[in-house]
Length: 196
Image 1 (cartoon, helix red, strand yellow):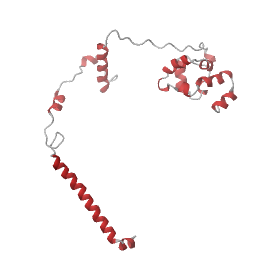
Image 2 (spheres, one colour; image 1 turned 90 degrees about the vertical axis):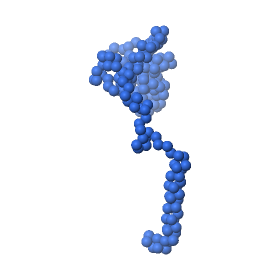
Image 3 (spheres, one colour; image 1 turned 120 degrees about the vertical axis):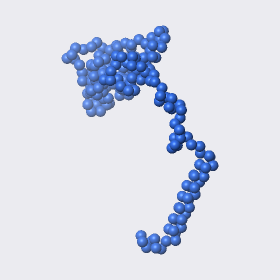
């Protein structure tokens, strides 16, 4: 490497000089642009006076009163949650009485609920884990036959109640899987969906 530098010292010196000239030109041009624009000091510059509107916001009393949070304590809500709760409460009070909440969605019309001993292991359906099993059980779905009997309307009703799992029923073909599992066709299931 030292021999290369000794042989090409002129090229290295020239490259260094060009680099310094370009750097000087860029930095010099930037400071000239600031002078040409006539940079006026603002509130962020050191020594400038604080903006009057900001000081007015700092000095203003709080818009939230302690009376609006009489039934809540620091263990229930804190900080930003209190502000959000106050805003939501004022919107509820200001809402017109003709605006009624939509009626709750009816429970899925599936097969009758089985007794405790008849529940199937819904985790065998690909795409259904322990959280979904608990959610489905809370909706009254405990057997493969129930899932296999779902119509498009039933799927829409159940899907609307799945929260973050919405869309899984159709995407993972739960109804088709449940039909295989309800009939006991393990070979058909494994041929279509893979090993159980």
